[in-house]
Image (cartoon, rainbow, N blue to C red):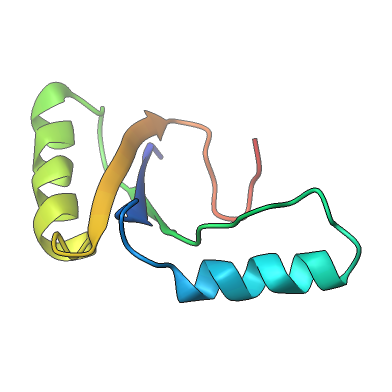
Length: 90
């Protein structure tokens, strides 16, 4: 089943308190070369049938209006892969 992945990140000009907390924890754990972390969201959307331009445009619209808050977040990527499964890393 095809999966469309949507990545959303806080706008670059905004503070990211969650990312700052994660970066601090990593530094305390000895990862002193890590200088910053930004925490975002990833959505994996399973769809029926082939992924075409019309479906990707529909997902882009949903990503910009429902999955993200345009005031504080940017949709940074939308891509698809027939083999992506929840929990799988690439």
